[in-house]
Amino acid sequence: MRLSWDDYFLKMAETACLRSTCLRAQFGAVLVRNHTLISTGYNGAASGVRSCLERGECVRERLQIPSGKNYEICHSVHAEANAIIRANFDLMDDATLYIFGLQQGKIRSGMPCFMCWRMIFNAGIGKVIFFDDERQMKIVNVKVVDRSRILSYSAPEA
Ligand SMILES: [Zn+2]
Ligand SMILES: [Zn+2]
Image (tube, rainbow, N blue to C red; front, side):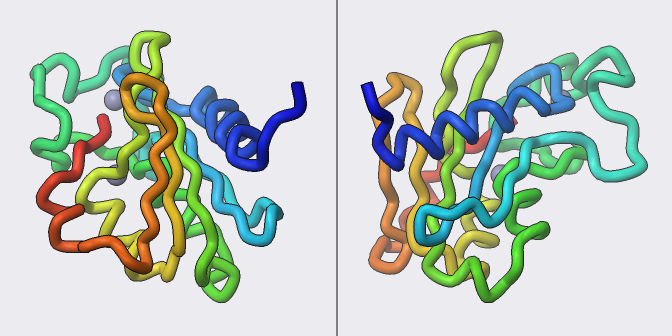
């Protein structure tokens, strides 16, 4: 069966998540404009910093920090953030961001965390597409959504 554009780019985001250096949860993101890939990213330690893989443990996991809390303990950059910082700013205007998440081999909601939402708003991204925990595709139209509400409801990442 031929993939739809959305499934095609979500598959790419799924592939990107397999490059993650976090032991707790793996996320992949691809930025697309006019059906053309403009950037990709996955969650992992900041450049020059030891990753979960190198340490052999995820500190957030060991300390049992709930999702979305105490981000200062983790030295990673989220998948969406990596895709955004590596993209050409002009190309991001009205682009679509696809996100895919895995935790212990199972799909996990790709809903961005509150920090990434703020970056998404300022990057001028038009749409965010991801699966929820039940693998239902969610499409957020960033241009019309209530942004304050999104920030108060966001279900975060690793
Ligand atoms: Zn980790
Ligand atoms: Zn995030």
